[in-house]
Length: 633
Ligand code: WTA
Figure 1 (cartoon, rainbow, N blue to C red):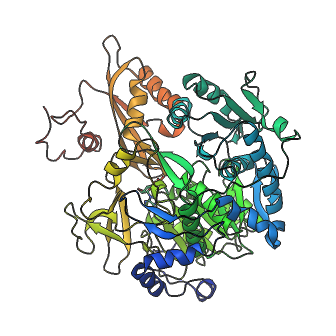
Figure 2: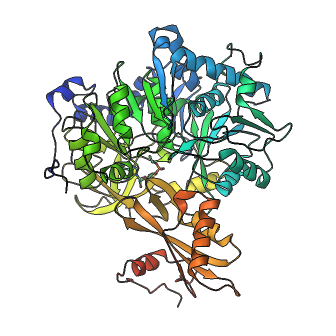
Figure 3: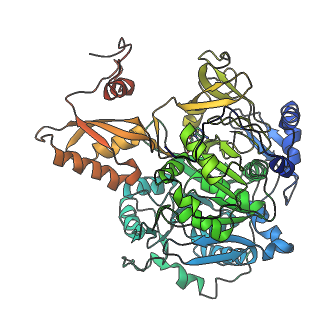
C-alpha cells in the first residue's frame, strides 16, 4: 500500500480556487432551467457557434426515435473548428502539440493545421471524394489522423475511423459495411519501442473487402510495405503536388448531414456504425467540453485516448478545436521507455487538464508513486476519467498522487451513441469517488425497473435517458431497424433511450454506474462484443461453436474467457488453445485476445438456442448458476 495515499473520504469539496475558476457556480439552478426549457437551452448553446444559416427548428421530434436537431440550419463543424479561428488571435495559437514515442515533437498552430487540412481536403476532392461518401481512416496516433478526419469533414465526406489496434477482419468488415472507396492509413506507428505495421494489415483487409479504389499511406516508420500501382499513393507525394493548394472551400453542410460514423460493439456479431451529424454533434461536444473541463484560453488539454474511439473524436479533436483549445497528443505506450513518460510530458508541456481511463490509471499506479513524484505536476488543474467505473483505489491515487489533492476528477459517463458526456460532475460540484455525479444540462436520466418505474434511492436498476439531446447518434448506418430495436424498443411506450448500463442513484441524486446489462465486454475501457470474439473463434477451422464472456480483472476491468467446442478430428490441448487465442488477436486485435480458453462438449443454451452466458460466467467464477429453468438440458 502506498504511504502517500490516505483513506478515501465519502465526498470531496472543490477548493476555493477551483470554484472561482469555474464557469458554472450553481449547477442545480442552470440544470433546472435547462430541463424546464430544453430547446431554449440548446438554442442558447447553438448560438455560441457560427452558422452559415440559422436553424428553423431546434428539435424536430415528429419522427421518434429519429430525432432531428437544428433542422434547416447550415453549419460545417470545420467552419467552427478551424475556419473561424483564422480571423482572430487563435490562428497563432497552438492547436496540436504532438510527441512521438521515440521522442520526436511536432506542433501545429491553428493556421498550420488549417493549411494542412485544406491541402489534404483538395487531394481528397481530386481523388473524386464526394459529400456523403464514407472514407475509412486506419492510422496510428500521429497528427495526420486528425488532419485526415478534418479534411473529410471539410468536404462533407463522412469519416469512419477504425482504431489502429484493430486487425484484418475488424478493418475489412468496417470497410465493407460502409462501402468505403477511399482508405487513409500509415505504414505503421511506434508502440513500446517497436514499429507496428498497419499498411500490411490494410493490404490484407483490402483483399477481403474489395471496395477500396484509392489508398493513401502516411510514411511514419519507414518499414517496407507493399504498394499497388494505381491504388496506392504516399501522403507526402500527394501533399507536395500543386493540386494540394491551401485554398479550399468548406462544404456548406446541413445541420443533419452526417459528419462521421463510428463502429462500436453491440450484442450481435456485426459492429454497429453509429451516425453523428455536423449540427447537433458540434453543439454538444463544444458545450460539454467547455463546461465539464472549464476550459480557459491559456489551457493545454490532454485527452490520452486514441482518436479511433469516441472519446478521441469528441474530446481530443472536435470539442477542443471548436473551443480553440490547445491539445496534446502522444503516440505511444504510457510506460515507454519508463513508467514516468506521461508525468514527464505533463511537466514538459505544462499540461493543465488530463483526461484518461481508469485502466490507464491502474496501469501506472502499479509502478508506484515515485515515478510521478520526481516530476513537477503543478500545472495540472483538473483531471478526468472515462470508459469504465473508476474503483476507489485508482480514484484515490489519481486524486492524491497525480492531482496532489488540488484537482477535481471529472468522472464522465457517456457512450459512442451519446456523442458526449451525459452524466458527469462539473468542477464546482461536490465529488463522490466512484460516482459520475449528475446529468449534464438538458439531460434527464433515471434508474428504472423493467416496467419503467423508478427504483428506490440506492437500488440497482436500468439506466435510461428520458428525452433527446443534440449529440445523440441519429441511426445505425444501413440498419435503422436495429437502431430502434437496440435503444428504443424496451421503453417504447415512454419514448426513453436505453443506455445498456445498470446503475444506482443515491439520496443526493448522484449516479453510480455499475456496468453493462448486455453482452458488451469492456476490456481496459475498450468496448468489445461477445459475439465478435465468438465469430472470430468460429472462423478458425478447428472450432464449431464458441462463447465469450467477461470476467472481472483488477487491472483491466474485465478480461475475456472463451469456451469452444471443437470440430471432429481436432484434439483439445495447450498448443491449440494458444493458436486459437492468437487467431482472435489476428482477426480482431490484441485487445480481444482471450485470457482464458477452455474446451467443452456443449454450451448451456436456452430452448430457443441462445447461449446462456450468465451460466458460463457463474461457472467460471465458481458461483451458483442461479435459475436454470430456461436451460435446454
Ligand atoms: C462504460 C466510451 C462507468 C459504460 C465513452 C458505457 C462508463 C460504455 C463510464 C460506453 C464511466 C463509460 N463510468 N462506466 N465514467 N464511461 N462507461 O461506447 O458501460 O466505448 O455504456 O464510450 O462504457 O463505451 P463507449
